[in-house]
Image (cartoon, one colour):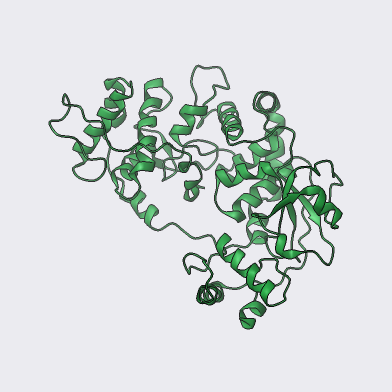
Length: 400
């Protein structure tokens, strides 16, 4: 899912400027834009300054080109408008669950090592593996080197992509990537779990013992590298990430939402009941999330859920991925409930415009139910005496 590349770019170190080399250029090369050969000269100088041999930089950058298709994709990223029920039903399909369970058996030893060394549950890794590339089947067909050269040269976000290009050169130095033939996502993500070069360098694990980290062709490398990366995001072994719950008729709905954590035990006392019956994590902070309001599926999210938000900033994607991982770990299908119909694109934009006029910060009026819009909806629901579950409906729009 290459359109979600921002998930790990936010973790990338930002390199300011370019280290010039008088041996390579008489004047400092631009950090972005301008003549491509001059730009690449500056990238080579920076790689050398970081201790990467010149021949590795030459090999990595030889034949590099600007890919206009990458620029087109970058400027036309789709917006996420599906509901949780729609998206999760499509992505957490029975076919994917069946394949996922087969993979868990096929690579049982690798998953056991991942859990032992990094504390990450097999289902968590497998769900990302499924959702990112269908277990390696769909990894992207953009030349990775050219994609990163294009995005680093482009002056929109060079501070994010230039470090990825330097790390790609380091992968070439290690013999882990062929710059001429390696393909992946349009934003430079590589392999079966779609990781950026900087993260592969930092967290890469040679799972199959061949002396290389090949997350594109080696499932063992991809699984263990993903596990180490997930651990680095703060995943705690033995703790849940999300837990489906059933709800009583009346709750302080205004306390629901990702930003409102209280001890899980307090939710249990209020009548929130885990479907798996496990109340053993009552001391952990938990948020009650209602992707489609109080009448739809309901979950408690725990601290481990934060790693999903680091991986991807979309609430619908992250909740679906977390739910997928619970299914692979033995949980039953969620209860769909009977959520009230939501708003279509024009209705959502009208609601956002109204909320904005009332002084709420909803960001852009774009028809997307983001965190700002959900928070504003909750506040207005509470003001109007409605259940403040954060789910926008035509009834709310009419009341405003």
